[in-house]
Figure (tube, rainbow, N blue to C red):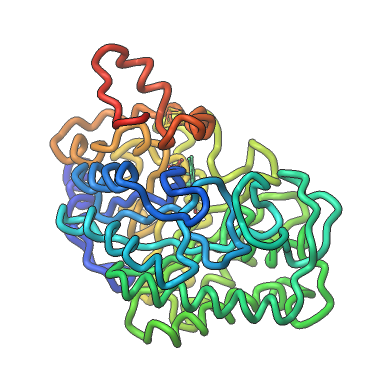
Amino acid sequence: MEKQIARLFEPVEAGGILFRNRLMRSATWLAGCTEVSGEVTKLLLSRYAELAAGGLGGVISGYANVSSDGRAQVRQMNIDTDERIPDVQKLAGAVQPLGARLILQIAYGGAVSNPAAVRLGSIKGPSAMEKDPVFGNRVEVLTESDIERIIRDFASAARRAKEGGADGVQLHGAHGYLLMQFLSAVFNRRTDRWGGDFDSRSSILLAVQEEVKSAVGPDFPVWWKLSVSEERDGGYTAEDGSRLAERLVAAGAHGIEVSGGARYVGVERTNSRLGTRAGIDEGYFAAHAAMVKARVRKRAAVALVGGLKSPHTIARFLEDGVADLFSLCRPLIAESDLVNRWAEGDLRPAECISCNACFKTVSDGLIHCPVMKQLHEGTWEPLPEC
Ligand SMILES: Cc1cc2nc3c(=O)[nH]c(=O)nc-3n(C[C@H](O)[C@H](O)[C@H](O)COP(=O)(O)O)c2cc1C
Ligand code: SF4
């Protein structure tokens, strides 16, 4: 097993990027930006540097909003104007000198946006709704010209990521945000070219990718985070989602990070599941990742995210050909130096207990782990303001 674990820490070229190892921080909104302009703060930059110093191969940013009306969360990063390009430079400057790669995740919130987030304009989604199933927002329908503008906004945001020095861009097609809303029959009841069967509901993702690729050129790494299955009875399945992944790769995607579900499907099947245990129910989307990997083979990198806890399980997934790269989110909120700990031979699983209490720390500055803080009372060295 030691040999297999050692493979995780070897350099690898995947999805158009050379990484120092196969472990990545999955996109994580840490509420570390200013409320109105969505500018990155020094506090957030110090957390990014801390993550890179912790030994990760890649750091995927928290979702950066592409449009003035697309903000999904409070203190979310914006990448909606050229004024935000220096923010990407700062993030790149925090992680790249420490050996990690930076991928900027870009997103449009849509129907399930937090109404407390400052945005211009109303909350819009694929179809009008009296109440969205997460926040109870009244949702207005996106017009054809809104959709065309949002597609262009994704492309401009990707260009800004490239100009700011990111190593790649990741398009957010997961967790119930706008592009997944188009995939879901819960949100998308359109009868025009953007609605209909699953393939027609997927057409916006292909249109966004095409516009993004024409803005950044064929070689700049363009990745997706996809909820490969909706995880809802009667919803779209991993068969549908893996076929979509294959279509995106055929059209030039360099990487697919496999996630699933969304908050609106309920806690048991959501993307950030509760109480997963090392060696028991880790990597809850592994079967979906294996389906995507079997379809795209070596044509694109496949990353797995969701409940990964132990180097032994991750090494087994690598050995079994489930994925090329492995992403973690909550374990790195709890222990930003987890990868170095494993690389140095302390192979105990991540200390994170998947309780999701970190979501509740949003009002205390940067999102952090209250459980670790309690565990290490007296020795805990919080970042300023945490
Ligand atoms: C505080 C927090 C913020 C998150 N922010 C994002 C985000 O910005 N973009 C995204 O795609 N996923 C986001 N996620 C989901 C994670 O990236 C990940 O898919 C999920 O938590 C499962 O991985 P884990 O078990 O390693 O935490 C977030 C999760 C948490 C807990
Ligand atoms: S609060 Fe801490 S232990 Fe709980 S999920 Fe978040 S990072 Fe993990």
